[in-house]
Image (tube, helix red, strand yellow):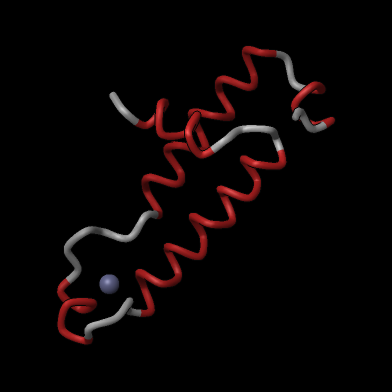
Amino acid sequence: MTSPATTALPPEQQVVLRQALADAINHRDPPLNCRTCETSGRLCSQCSAGLSRARTYFRLAREFGISPYDLEKVATP
Ligand SMILES: [Zn+2]
């Protein structure tokens, strides 16, 4: 299934968009080890905000027809 937005972007731009979103999501993903989260036993407000932002990026990616699997492929060096 392809969305209209995907077909509007040339393949080169799709690659760049995929890389940009993968970088953004990686940057916003909560850290595996957060002292505040560990102490409180749940997501701290900062990690929660980061996760929420990452989810927004994921939704945008989906609107452009980019699956989370594609983002992971880009994110892996
Ligand atoms: Zn945290």
